[in-house]
Image 1 (spheres, rainbow, N blue to C red):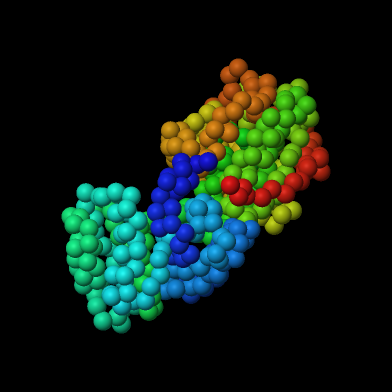
Image 2: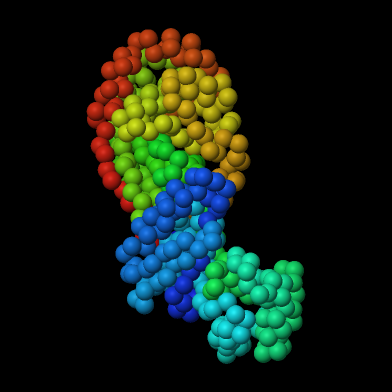
Length: 410
């Protein structure tokens, strides 16, 4: 369970078993004429994420979605799922009432009474109103003042407008008002499936899962590829990659995973090529095979977890040498990130504990003692002259096993 999910479980029940959630999306609001396309995709993804939890109804409301839950649907489980759906900026479990202030006062009482019964007394509070319907006979400031005075009379709590310990949210949408205690974070970004298909190279380490998760947040649909050295190495890396891919994928989302046996190609590289160039040669053949799979899957880019200068194969010169074998763009979402930043993201994503479990990585199989930190495409082309490159790539693709994985629901 990720850190964000643990925080979610602590905060989401404060409104009890409310049946309404307001879902605010992120960058979709900036999409102009294409906005409806992105909204429809996000609505489809939300439905898929919570489909197994019971009945629900989702409808657009002034730049957000209103999600109504059926009686048997678990609010906690819905919140956990929404926290992992790209495109969602924030979401709020809400009580619903009409948009007149007397009705809002009555609904606010039903929020305050459980807090008072539990002895939960904040040092200070504030009313935070958002008014999508500008035709209402009061402004957001007036709503803040009137409902704030009501809360203060009922509780005796102090008001603090800046950084209050307890913000009480009022969302006026159409002729309704939705009252909330929390604005819970979603992943943000764009809905998965809106920006095209990419192939993600997934190693089982720390970096590539974070890289894949970042590209999912940019709206991409992903195909995963894992290169393994079995039988020279154990099956641990394959098991890890399955677990990581299921963790990365949003709930309700599925993806294909290509398991590519790389040991035979590595053996020929080890036997026939200079040892200092070994890892760069591995990477060039991985990129070639990944590109062949990408074209087969109608994907338009490759995605790796490279961070500039982190290891010998990720120097600027070596990245250029590796990129030269691909006619597709190679995207590197982590290229400018520090390792500590990547680790922090992995912990928030929930992938870190799995990534650090020991396994034999195919690139570390017979690692040379002094790998080259600088290379040119011409040097590598000369080193590859003894290899049947076209045949090697064809064998890698044909020998691949394809699995269907689905995003975790817990």
